[in-house]
Length: 228
Image (cartoon, rainbow, N blue to C red; front, side, top):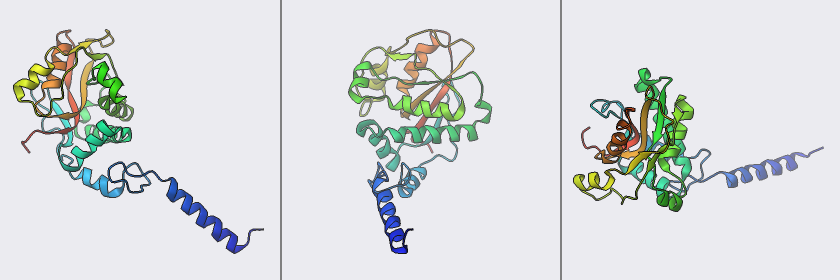
């Protein structure tokens, strides 16, 4: 028989253990029951676009979950450079939810989600491709098929800080399809973490279209485009 004081002690120990075992939020390092604490989650969602399909037009339609600013910008840095992969999974879920809400006509059976690849040297150095994490989570939520056949054929420097022309030259002819796993009837949705000038995704789309594949558009976590 457990005495009342013993039960209280057990409950105290369990509460203390649960608090100790809770993972810390990767953005603020405070204890959190979920991957992100409520404060940081609120900070991120403040940058969510109310109309995520506002750029879904033109020769390469763009779908963006949010703006590349503030907490979103910091969180993507934590994902890419600090290895907080759970952030990529969350963004994939959020991107999928926004996609299904904003473009219900896009929930099609022949949709192929193709993440923008890293060069093998960078992939070895980083240990993972953030675009693949986002795309994998997106596919689990939407039912789209994940395809990793797009390859980066030569190393490129970081696009940050380059002019628009230098960005285009940096990624020109940098992509190729590794295997013929995609059919001409498939709709390819390129997925990446951020979109600024679009030089990277346009280079990838050019490589796919050269093989007569249908590039449906691009979906990203955040865009740095200035027009609101």
